[in-house]
Image (cartoon, rainbow, N blue to C red; front, side, top):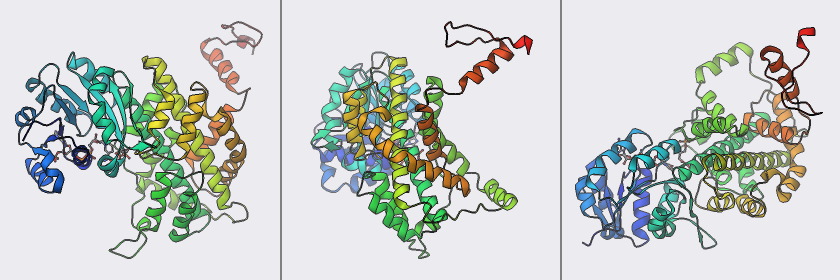
Length: 467
Ligand SMILES: NC(=O)C1=CN([C@@H]2O[C@H](COP(=O)(O)OP(=O)(O)OC[C@H]3O[C@@H](n4cnc5c(N)ncnc54)[C@H](OP(=O)(O)O)[C@@H]3O)[C@@H](O)[C@H]2O)C=CC1
Ligand SMILES: O=C(CO)[C@H](O)[C@H](O)COP(=O)(O)O
């Protein structure tokens, strides 16, 4: 067999699907996995595609089976496994061979690895779409030197999702820019999922709807402005029945959300950047809180269950849909605002409209609304998305519904942290005169930190000694 065009390490959920996708698009690929049996099982199960796949038992064998200059994709868990693989590979590679970390790396690690790689070509690429996306067309966010991206772009664009024929695989910028954009994607994913879960909670506990009615509602919303992969799968999750018990799946799944860390990375980085992403942060906190099962049960025993039931004439499903539309716009406005801040801080010149475009298909947050976001960001990438005319009009029409949902949820003891953070962000961003003058007064009172005055000057002090 002739040498392969590209190599891949890590035949887990994503790596296996990505390798099949690459082979399916006509590229010969050599693969290696830490557990050798998995490599052979993978090859045995590859059907017609097996002819394009070279299974290898050692890293030396993998490297020997690749065309020079080589390109090797890592698809292993973030952190030490990536560093360990780089360490093991490095001595086997020539100077112009390339390592491509396609997992969910923390972009600070990618920045470091780019530096440590020196002249060895290194790319950090964010891949989104889960197993199905990896197999049939993910969204790909590339980071590293442009010339390195250009070397493999023909493969990455061929395997990516397409929006009206346009590949959803784009170079985002130098160093860890691709992994940064993927982290923000995941932060938005967390907030989008959390807001949908909050709407589910209002339907289940507030409006007393059963899973079938909830599933139908999501299916209806998926035909309107909320049309998106996450709304679609939420309807399917709500409709699914547990084959073991015959109960709705949602009634057998424990209400404690897992997380691998990308949302947390985004929240932490937002603090470093002084970026305002409250809905995303609220979604991360909500996952942390969800894990406190025993403490929450103790809280309910101590304080009693909240009243929950909301009358249907007070809160309609239409209002809930509008609240989700408003929440979604506000959450994306926050995410894109954070990307803009990072672009300035790290000097990446991140292409905001192209980011919206690359998220239109293939990734977990894909939705019809992203196409409109791409258009709005093309018109003016520096403007907060909530101020773009199309989105401002939608917010003018929907923010009152968000207000009603948050108010009713608060009155009935239903926690809606992401929706209420979205509303607070909206209200803060449409308030010219805020309340931070009080904070500045307090800071100056206890620490002589100084404050600016409306009538001029930056470093004034108050007459606190006289009070
Ligand atoms: N699952 C998803 O939906 C998505 C995942 N990702 C990212 O893709 C990457 C892979 O995830 P996923 O495929 O889900 O993970 P899996 O757990 O399914 O697979 C992990 C793979 O990495 C290998 N591996 C684990 N630890 C090491 C190590 N220390 N050294 C060498 N190889 C190792 C495993 O080999 P072995 O068989 O020997 O255990 C396995 O092949 C992660 O960074 C993840 O965050 C990105 C987008 C979506
Ligand atoms: O990157 C992804 C989707 O885009 C992965 O599925 C990731 O694992 C999701 O994050 P978490 O496990 O924290 O929910």
